[in-house]
Length: 297
Ligand SMILES: NC(=O)CCC(=O)C(=O)O
Image 1 (cartoon, rainbow, N blue to C red):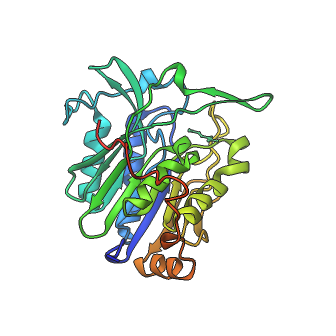
Image 2 (image 1 turned 90 degrees about the vertical axis):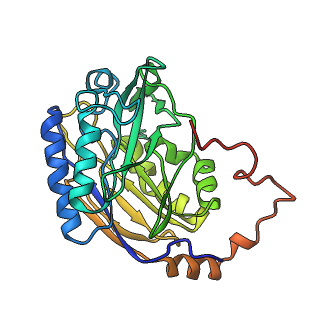
């Protein structure tokens, strides 16, 4: 079997503390990404809505236009800042997510941009599963009041390392997306996310470990730092899990950077020990990675 992860790498999840000032958030993101790169990180990840508060009323106010690509600096200051930061850091940068307004569809999306170490855009992922939940007395949230969903699985091929899947927060709850990505050869699933104090305590770590153990791949969930003065209180606890569902690195709720060294040999070792990869029974149930899967939009 070809190596899923061609050479070892250092992953960094930046659990960013951000506020209402977009320019300040972008400047702070730059400082923290450069800090991670100085520690040797090859892939750096930012959180969901890293340059704005998270909430339906904030999405239109902070939205940027990304298409046609590349946007101008006026259309998307975040696109240009992320591209510059990736170049300066000489690292792959998964730019969390930002609210996007698309001129063609006249709709808003929750969108993640990934750049290579030269600052070129590699991938765009619009959150596929919108966060619409209602737990009486705890939390009611409806992204769909403002946002529209994306319609594709996002896999990015990093030439020197291999394939990585990018999705956003609530997307982690849908094992099909992770399974498709893993079966298409990804060694790592990355989710910029912002769980809350109710569901974070219940499911954040569980979801990360579940996607890892189901698929025997590395998983990273990157949250904003918790801000109890904000309207939405993020769970924090950014976490990197290995292909055996063991936690390699996890933060508390404060700002910080979670680092982990990823190695393809670990994936092979885990898959050799528990060979579910060769034991699947597609004559009994379907292979979700085959058939109609959308990669392009
Ligand atoms: N931003 C989100 O998608 C939140 C998802 C979440 O909290 C969950 O429990 O799922």
